[in-house]
Length: 287
Image (cartoon, rainbow, N blue to C red; front, side, top):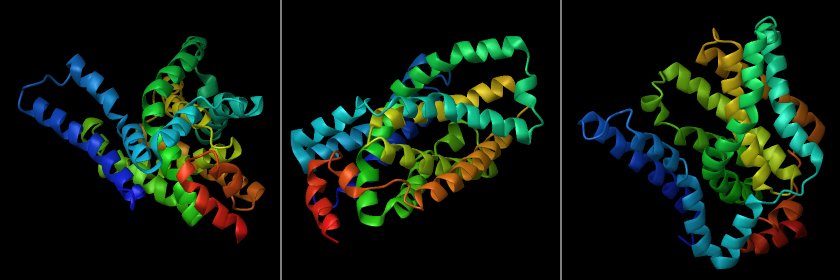
């Protein structure tokens, strides 16, 4: 594990999610557990912590308590500037609302006042819940452990491409549990890949803050639900297409503004990521 920490991390992340998922599926198929049983719902939430648990295990092995402490501190690293909270909590949903308006003829802005009132009331509470569950469970692994190591080795673009694909494929059980067909899951993979680049950009601009990427992950998830509330006729495939288009436009702007770097600076980001990366960061600085 010490010699191949990245491989160990991905193996653990997949195993800690896919094995419990398979057990739940078998239990429901054989009538041991009802599909709508509360324990199945709770287990579904806990399964999303597979990447976080994998990150903690591998970090403990390769970097000890110091490394684990650094990883946990980055979860509450919130001093990143007010503008990043505004971008994540307000700018991201606004971009998707604008995109939906352009693609669907202003549909979200024609929603009833009641739908808008419900959306505004639910937005922040659902983001908080998602942040404490799927956001925390996934981002401690994907952006907390994997991204700094992949960026140091491959650079930001290739690193994000690799991570985005592996992150998307990790969701393969959704084919069963969310009844996704091949087309829908393919769109989901593309949408996830686009999200990955936006997450990398925010991560790099906030000095590796996991708090901000956890919030962004939650906002990306819940904005999808809010748009579904404002546009009930929107299909899930149309929703994924909307996200792909908006992510693509945003990524082109970000690549132009950052000259293709996604704001990555190994010395600025890496030192706060993990103590075991320090030798590699020093070698990178001397190049």
